[in-house]
Image 1 (cartoon, rainbow, N blue to C red):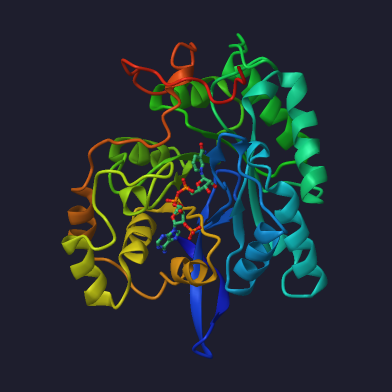
Image 2 (image 1 turned 90 degrees about the vertical axis):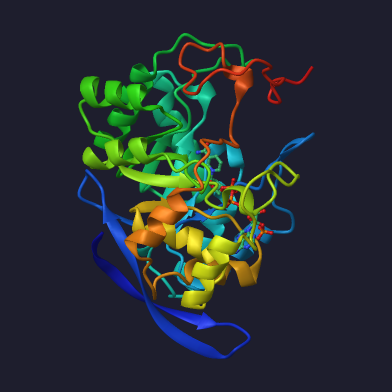
Length: 343
Ligand SMILES: NC(=O)c1ccc[n+]([C@@H]2O[C@H](COP(=O)([O-])OP(=O)(O)OC[C@H]3O[C@@H](n4cnc5c(N)ncnc54)[C@H](OP(=O)(O)O)[C@@H]3O)[C@@H](O)[C@H]2O)c1
């Protein structure tokens, strides 16, 4: 892990205490630093589509997050949270709490804008919503290109990648990367691209350890961001899933040893693996709990023990796209209906 970027003062609400903690950073292929934890801002999906923030709830969460030390925010054009993140950053800059350059924004290109000529326009739309003049890290959300009506498009993801490279050369994004690409697809980008990806965002948690993929990415200098970091500890798509829970005895005994909670242990496990977790919460107490993981380390044995929970289980499995030529995951027998297509 790269040298610590900054010292952050975390005020412990309610207790009236303050502690200083180092939030480290990881060096990307472009030479810039990514803070080692980010706040996830995807609010979920229901029968009405993407869940939207109400009454500026997300803006207030992001402002609070900045106060307790978060400097990295993960969004995507499809999450519809860019605007409130931008508002929060603007207010905190105006208050003098942070400068723009202290903040690291990751956002993503949606599948319906995969043509090379569409990428800069998509970025400009995101910049407008964020109220910023550059994005720190811009990811291709999926290798899958779709037409406006969500039918499969034949755009090769290498064409899209060239669009991301163009944007980095223009300076509207400082770093570029991928999300939900499998190893073979990443290898192709490394071979045929002219700029190496700075990062890849993939699903990493107790039940999807992704040992080989993480090691491969890191051997190429590609920083791994781990999404859905709590795995089965929390409900998924509105229901409890199989797998270890918050009171799991193995995790609880490690948590007890360090005076931490089991969610903190699984986040720290990602930090030990140099994976950048992006836990989502809108709860003020959990916001603080999730970043309070930089004052202890796990032993290699503990990391191995936690690796042992792996069952290669994914919770983001858009099987409705599985007949697309660039679908990145194994196919299933009974694909689910496409929630993006309104019938
Ligand atoms: N690239 C992709 O395709 C992709 C896919 C999925 C997700 N993501 C990104 O990854 C982020 C995180 O993933 P996720 O939202 O799927 O899952 P997650 O962060 O693993 O879990 C979020 C859930 O955990 C709860 N939670 C948060 N902290 C907790 C704690 N300390 N104790 C107990 N419960 C806690 C949250 O509830 P409360 O809010 O009520 O605390 C929420 O229900 C997303 O927001 C998004 O930014 C990217």
